[in-house]
Image 1 (cartoon, rainbow, N blue to C red):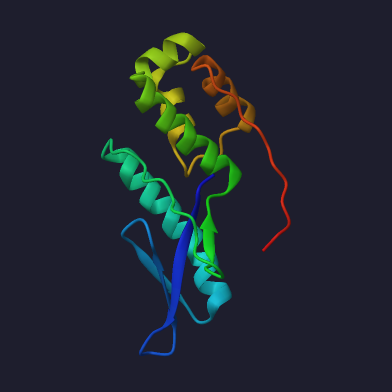
Image 2: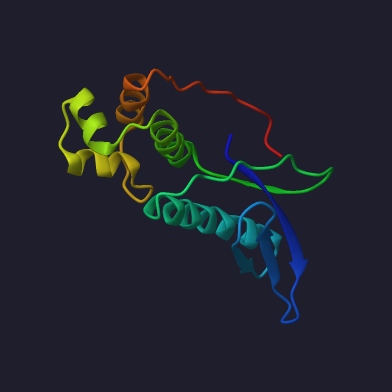
Length: 141
């Protein structure tokens, strides 16, 4: 769901520059594998920024033929989906906390991509908003 197309270009200092097609941001690596691995952290950092500034999360475009993507890890993707669902429904953190019987600090952790929440907690929050998590297994690229 949160797989963003990237462009990988050899930089003038022999590193690989990774840029995102749909969101401003870049990272690099000594080779493609390292740039793609660093791309995950860069993508999470950008999502944190959108969430901190209370902005909508840009949807990823469809990758062009052969274009590589960087995908948020499942827990981070679930937290971003929770954030986006809350925004779309007009539900504030205090209201979600009321629905779940949680304090504001606990709700903050559910939305913190750097906090290792349990997936069942994020799932409960999504259910409180009328949504559910589904899992799809695909062949690795």
